[in-house]
Figure 1 (cartoon, rainbow, N blue to C red):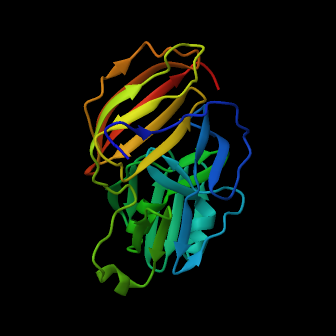
Figure 2: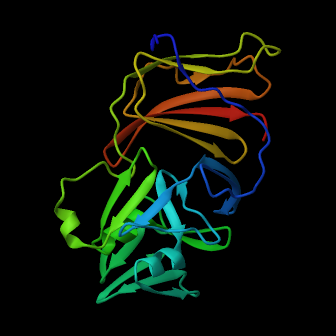
Length: 263
């Protein structure tokens, strides 16, 4: 295959329900920060000491590139006690002599009184308090890895595992080529297929629906020679395309955002 010609991402834009599916794909409506967010992404699995964590009433979801899990379930699965302070909107996670404090909507946490900073804060999603799993595991000094091919967060409480050679982090860097162009439909009445071109294969990309108004594609490790904005899309569905390169905790990625006319 000539990668200079085609790295294709076919965007089937249509209605999807708010039903949660525990399987290959999770599609649901997430309500947080006072807004509804249409969420659709491949399932993220959790393994704790070799045992799969089975979601109860809320699956793992990715918000701003970080895996979020229901407060009580992940705390209990890790053998912790958890207390909720309604007045202060704070979560106290206790394991042995360790006390970890999270405050809803704050990126500052406390490990035994010592402050640490998170990429994303504890967040109330669909009336459930969700914690960033990496921040919790790190604060409890647990060994955490990200198995990218299987989209699995692996947590081990055995300290001996922490001596292994470090592997790719949850938002791990993947070396890739350069995104070189975007092909849009030839006309509004033509097949509504958008093609992203590259000069080589992409090792990893993630797709997320946001607020029923956007499709966000993140290409990890990819450089970009794409235009920053494309306004003429020849589409009644996609009103514009925006691109930019970003870096988060040492992970670089190129983001391509498709602005939609509706759900």
